Length: 139
Image (cartoon, rainbow, N blue to C red; front, side):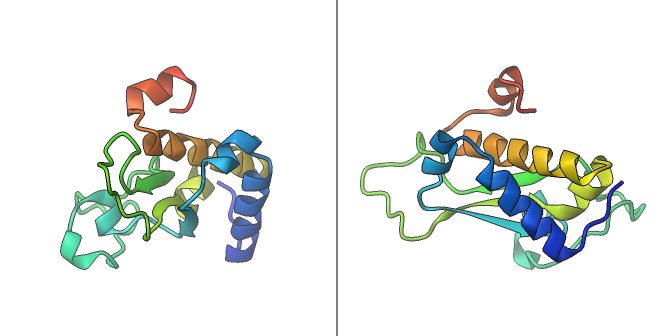
């Protein structure tokens, strides 16, 4: 486990994005990349009505946060879009700080994994499923 301040994590996210290949950065048109401390009930699909409700990791009550949820793509993949799709509202890739801190033991590992997380979530934007991403090395 490697703890980071919010400022350190944000700097790590910027560093990871800066290190990404240009073709991936070009694909981020109208895709916002943000970070949250932990996934909330909305991110986990548990309760759409209370999207600001955080569920503590390891609370022992059954609905525990998975440490392997490092990021999430929220939007429509380009293969799901119909003619006339209105792209005024950006799709969002959310990177979760807490799971990254719990799963990796150094800042360098976290920066590397943030980059992998963003590429993984971009894969969903392009319509790839979990199996296809895993086959490409982006589990």
